[in-house]
Image (cartoon, rainbow, N blue to C red; front, side):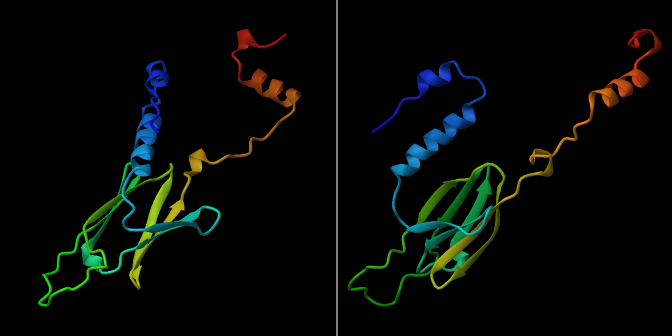
Amino acid sequence: MTYDFTPMFRTAIGFDRLARLMDTATEAAAGPAYPPYNIEKTGEDSYRLTMAVAGFSENDLALTAEANTLIVAGRINGESPSFEVLYHGLAGRAFERRFVLADHIVVEGAELKNGLLHVALKRVVPEALKPRKVAISTSSALAIANDTQAPAGLKAA
């Protein structure tokens, strides 16, 4: 099933990022299922992406984070085996997987262990965007502060 959001974006300004996310999400839903992966929440603001990449070494894998997208690509660069393969059940084909990252999600690191690629992700919200407590003062204190800062001709009578 395909949805057309064009009418909604004809009258919306500044929502091009939302349109891009919708396009990427629909493409990802119809994308390939290789290699299999898990997305795990490991803490309040931390996540882990685990991909099954048996047969790939760290030199065969590439991780790229750009513009709220994590790209995991794999290509085996080894030489062909010197023996005949009778049954090929292990997939060693090249792949590229794209994951859309929410705002302020950063890649902390990656580890390849036992044929699994673990990518650590964390939400790091800048201090300027975090909620902050605003002190509330009494109206008399605010009026006094305004009287002392206002020019002489504008002071309240």
